[in-house]
Length: 507
Image 1: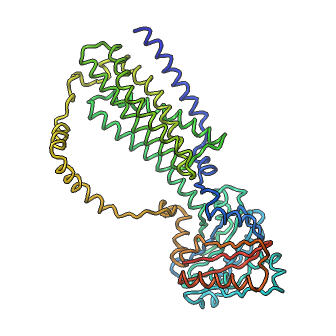
Image 2: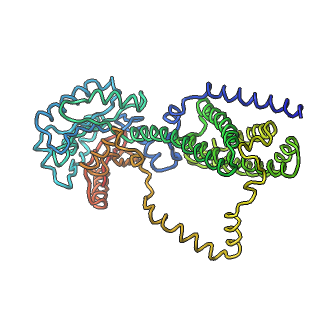
Image 3: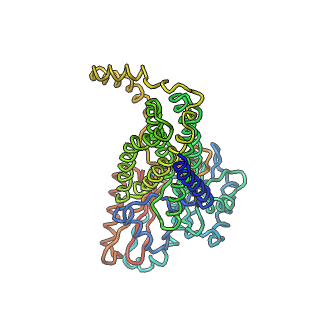
């Protein structure tokens, strides 16, 4: 007995020391999500191929973020004074574009008459330049993007209450730093201003996920405490289970975060919450298996040491097989050619650490505390058999078809009550307390649906496209897009070093 105690007390102390060290050595998970947690598609995906073309395109807008600056006057129309103030703000911003790492800026038209006169299906009608004009297109492409009057006019809402400016901002600063700097720079008297972009929405989604993770931890711990207290009528068993699982979670999370920080291990904002939920669930299940087996051995008349060893041996087989199966399955996700699935490989590390911790922590407390672990309950026969579960299992086995029909009847209301549709839009995951979401909604209310995330179409050829024939074909493509989407609200037409590009907002 003394030998068992001396052996395991050293292991327990070692785990505690490792857990404390893990806390101090753990990198900031939010910063890692921001820098390494972006979902990325395979390079062969069409959007990634287009992104590569963008990064080599003439106007040098590679590695930039598309940002919208939103100026809103609520339900009232912007007056001339407000429009001039907005123009002054944007002119100042343009003059300081190096300070904010702004590569390109498209300002709205200040002329209120031009803004209001847009038809409902406003569209750019810039004619394709002729061959003689195309030689200057590349050098003037930045100016073309900045000064296209049709584009500038469309940045004014039809009801005259809102104006937006389009920016291409470099990635010198983090998303949070960029938003903070731009927000301070575009403040304008008498109007509300917002900074919104796909990156800003993703960043705020990560903030929301981080906040939700804390709530999930509290809710999960409370539920586990209640379940174990009700199951065993004990106040100590839930503590033993949570301590074991908590140590495993802290150590495994520190391992994963350090791998991400040092070796670019796959990671996303779903990794941490997946580890938390699965480890809490598995840790609770495995603890129940061990403790039930320990209780069974004690009822059989074995002492604390024999009961502990038998519980570890009998229940340990089931725990080992289940753990190894899950470890293999989650490890296989590392071969998926999609970063979100790859990021779940961290769960395999968590399960492995949980297995090692649980098979040393829990047996030690079972041996050390003996029957005291079931305090305040002292009856080992209590809750050995559940009459309700016994009745349900017996009747279900005898009448499986009736049991299935009852299950379907019970489940049907929940299916119809849950009418939420699958939505991959990050903006739908956060509330209006985030300025990026508020700006996003204002743009959606007053502009075409595609204004928040314009669709860019890149055309590349093995020969120069600066001739009348190719430009006419591009114009034909433009008309086809307009006809298919019914509404073609904006077009930018620019040239790279050897090919043109069309950027369109389609709705």
